[in-house]
Length: 262
Image (cartoon, rainbow, N blue to C red; front, side):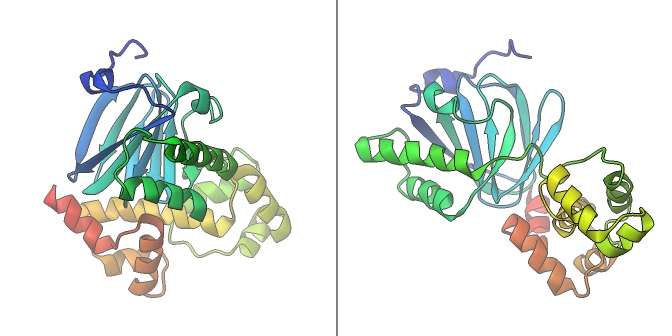
């Protein structure tokens, strides 16, 4: 796949100096076949979930994350809902500061503000030294923000493995970490530490992500929001809707309408 030709669009663009922005509006259920780019690429969506296929795995990213794809890495994309999309090509000198593998990068407030400013001004290439400085600061903030390999990481840890398997199989299970500690003959403190060390997040945060991914699947199948909320263990539909909106920037019903519109 690394022999895939570059697209005519990429070949017609100037090299990023140090960044080059592209803006697109995607319709629901848009697919991009396997391709690669001559430069590292930052992907940013306005809402929902961006799904990327890589040679060895699938990467799902909600709107709160940037997706970093190094130069020449083959990938395909599926976009389930209509959204605004920003693609940023990164010059080699700055790309070298970012991870060598595809990953997700969170957007803390300053990083988001730097991006928003470029987007609001519809900047493509850097027009002056101020834009150049802002571009370099943006990449620096990406480096400082850290990265994760996946939105829903896994672990082979002997204590966590049965918990992760059970939650994936039954996302609505409300078993507390304290109760899980008793089942796996450990302590709540030990499990909390293992979650942070192995997965980079708390048990509750990981379970919320499992529930979100299950909700996306059920919404696509046409399941009612109230039924989804109940089956995922939420006390009320409003609690589920609030979680969904925090994670994706869009309500479940709007997500479903955009799927149907495609």
